[in-house]
Figure 1: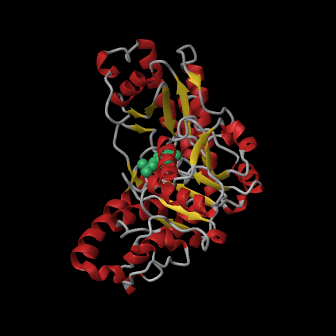
Figure 2: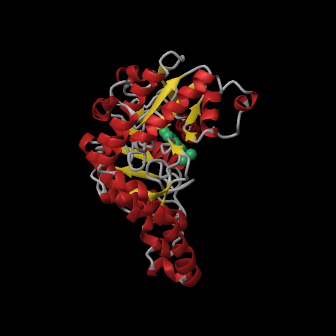
Figure 3: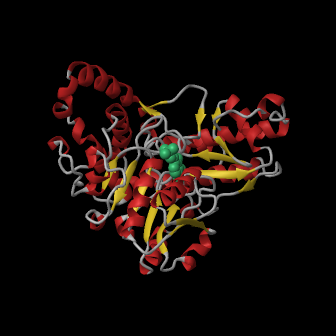
Length: 409
Ligand SMILES: *Cc1c(COP(=O)(O)O)cnc(C)c1O
């Protein structure tokens, strides 16, 4: 792909107009929307309205008047079509970490006599840490990690849950949700999918895969803003049997009856805990609403084209610079980010950020770039790789300032 090709592809891109719907700083090529999505233009207006009109003027009346009380289910219902779920199966609540905890404990309790949570080493850290904490809380349970290729064979009558991330945060590898789900269920286990790097970027068909449980992030491809609340999915057939260990009043069947005894709601609402973050939900809803305007197939096709173009350009322009592709080469088996390993990945990432190409580094040696089809263009990819080439051939990364570690990478 030449720069002319890239410019022509951008001109012909059916999603081109979506780019204008985001606030993107000048002189920045943003390739980290898989970690923190960009700001939709309408979000600032919507949040200001929620603050000044709904909170400032409406005060507590807004719980009814502006349906604050319904926001968690409403926004969950808007996420549902992006993941192949029914609206009543998804709710926005808490963080991904907290939702993992709720669903792991619920699933362990729903599989008495089974004690193992199966996952893969190198899964996103919080997933493994929370599984550890959930096992500790329940008492009679443990986490076992095995390379993903060995997991299906290891599922046995002690396996309560198989917990996996659909698109790996580092490698970008996508797992076969249908096959793993079916294999686990055949052995009587439940499957919990983490969709944090999938939702809004790759096709997900939870109900088509007969999935049990899922969680995912609001601040990545959904563009909900820093620390946006997360979502969780529980297949309808499990609603009655699964109970959240965080039995807060918002998950009660009748929160405003103020009863002493806990009785869970008979729908997805039982997985709420406390009062929802209304301002953050307003921001998330704006991010999610943008997906109503695009054909998902178009989005997926562009995601694959962008990431394929990046791989081809890095290999063509920086092929002799010591990069090794970590992500699957086949776009169909990949999420919307691409990782290359390089011994100097940290310093290279820092100098790129200095030059306006924002990707990220993942320990120990991964340079990760995310391609958000809503706002990333082909010319962005071309320019990013030319800057990368310049950084490599000039050795610009090898300055002391670029080796100093920041708190957040
Ligand atoms: C981003 C991400 C998380 C983040 O969890 P938080 O509770 O929002 O910090 C969890 N799991 C995976 C797989 C992720 O990619």
